[in-house]
Length: 557
Image (cartoon, rainbow, N blue to C red; front, side):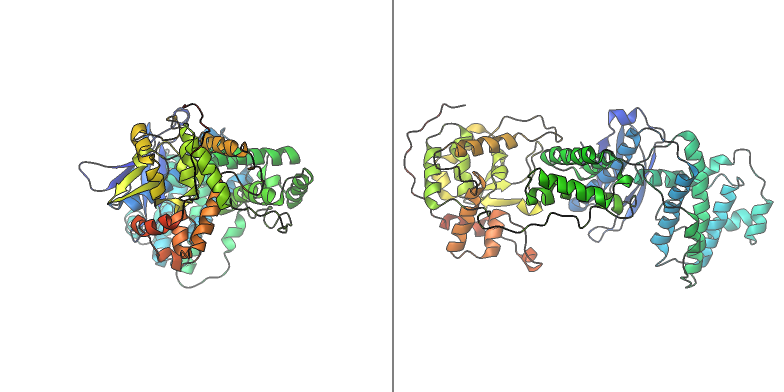
């Protein structure tokens, strides 16, 4: 697991991640260039990293928030490297190799053409590249992707005032090939990582030569841009478009490694990928057509799946994966765009809240339970408006006293629990009625660990233990007489009821959203920040439905 830390002899945050064992066994080049973007006013930077048993580097910031963002950037880049290393070494043909070299040409031009600097810089850079390509110069600095070259003095020292004559006067060295790896090795690693490719030794040698040619064509275009000439880039026409041979499964695994989605999402999306692959009969991203996606969509409709399920789950999955390939320049366009199931909301389909009488009935039943899940979750959900998954993963250490106020810290659980989105993280006041029910005594007895499940393994790739807690509560509610209405989700109808009560009490929408962890509706909303102390009076405004003693008692767990 990756983490950031402060060294005792430095005030900068550092990143550390253990290299997966299977990757460590197949490392064939331990140099990696990592690129970090400008963040919160702090400049971006590039770092050369050596991959051993552990990957570690300075994040060059004293700001913990920036360090967390850069940690995510590092993980995203390393996920591509791990995916590439885990693939079989490929032997690419000449057209594929030149397609990859074209990506290097694009990197040069796209990075610098708006502000190309001095023409003399590109002339000197091109001269050094030519000398390396011809095997006349070996001891040269590496090209770092995205970094403006500054090699006029180097070219002057090596070649003199007449660059062409100076290069021609140098002999071709017996070990001249070493210069290609030294000069272009990081650039080669970068382009392979972007495509999640691992190539064999012969392909790497040919690719280094092709990249060296891009080290001529890219600077040629920028040399003209530097004097204000932005004529069409005729040099780009030399390169074919690189056609990826990646599979949907490979795309999914790389996307998963970068984004770290919830385990439940991983399970669902893997099933959607399998569904599409099984329907079209192959797994190749480049071979997918718009007709394939449309036919698959029609097939799902014929199976009886709801339009919302197809649009928001099945198609959303494939669209995200194909757009991921477009964003990373491995596809020109996504064939899934604008494909959807036509649907219209029907009367009788929308979700409904519980009535106050139904809430009273469920809280009465819960009062008579000894199992913590059934005893406390209905009360917590009903009188806070929280999502059941948020409170199901509560730890005792997340129930805190702030001044004279008791709050639940709604946040990701320490063992890998997730929240719906970043707006969900908040402090929610505990309703006074819940305290009077004895909830704090229960928390004290349970200790600082999970309140409603046994401590999980901490494996973030597995479904979190709180998921089964939510399912058990929902099944229990559904088993009660009168609670089978499909329009009233057994757990979520509490949340609808609470939001309705806040509205009836005249609580401003922005305050209600802050209490319940709903997303901001406008840019202005993002500037409103409500403390737990300001939320508490509104939470306690919600009247507890009339609850009676219950004779229904289940054996304690």
